[in-house]
Amino acid sequence: MPTIVVDVMPKAELLDPQGKAVSGALDRLGVDGFSGVRIGKRFELTVDGDVDDAVLAEAKRIADEILSNSVIEDVVGIEVVE
Amino acid sequence: MPTIVVDVMPKAELLDPQGKAVSGALDRLGVDGFSGVRIGKRFELTVDGDVDDAVLAEAKRIADEILSNSVIEDVVGIEVVE
Image 1: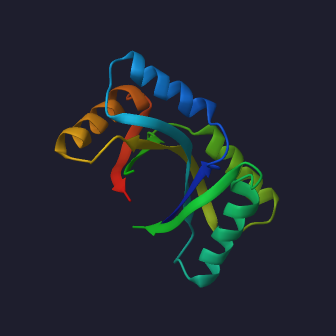
Image 2: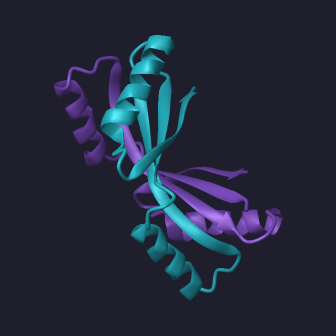
């Protein structure tokens, strides 16, 4: 069955405490080469049947209204896989 | 600066309580067309300098050893953006 992947990230202007914690852990563990980490969410929606324009529009609507909080998060990607 | 995106999802054979909760919420809100939701994490690693094979290998290593818990999670994607 096809899957729609929705990626949600904290807005760029907001502090991301989880990401900061991981970034600090990488420094402490001696991992070089990465100057920052931000952590968001990846939703995999299993679709009943085929993906058409209506299903994609519905996925976009729930991504904006239900899966993300537009005050603090941005939907950065919606794509169909499989 | 280039960014490496690491996607981590709960293993398929594990229950995903967060995803189940969202799936139930969609049903209650009258959203049709989606039979399941799973929720994972999306890490955006900002890279100092250029992305070469060594940086990618290091990203893969920290994805497997630090960013994910291999008992319950799979790294489902590592890609370079920008």
